[in-house]
Amino acid sequence: MTRTCSTDECFSSSVAEARYPSILVAADRLGSEGAASDFFECGDGWFDIIDVLCQRLEFWIVQNEAPPLVIERVKAKFGRLVIQYAGGNDMTAGMVDMAQEVSARVCEVCGNPGRTEASTGRWLITRCADHRGISFSY
Image (cartoon, rainbow, N blue to C red; front, side, top):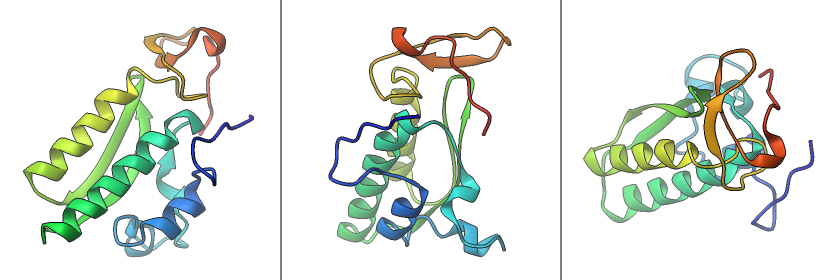
């Protein structure tokens, strides 16, 4: 799959882990090999949403001396992001909720505007017109 990036470097599991070590530390804590890919189960089209979320969470936590937040897992479910996390406060919870809601309007494949609909396997997926019908095996 070809990824188009809105930043200088494509956002990937390894990039995420390097950029946001204070937020994406769950893999180490849960006893896996420490790779962020252990808890990213979604298409490339949503990586910009995750990147911006992590950036805003990190900024808010540092600038406001807010309680730390750790993202434990990110996956696609019912055509949208599901972000499992621990810690934080009402503001960080609101940021996570917003990212999850935005994902329901963004193609999971490419990041273009999309809509949530039922796939052929009765799963809910969010796709643009160009990627309608494409499914993933995570």
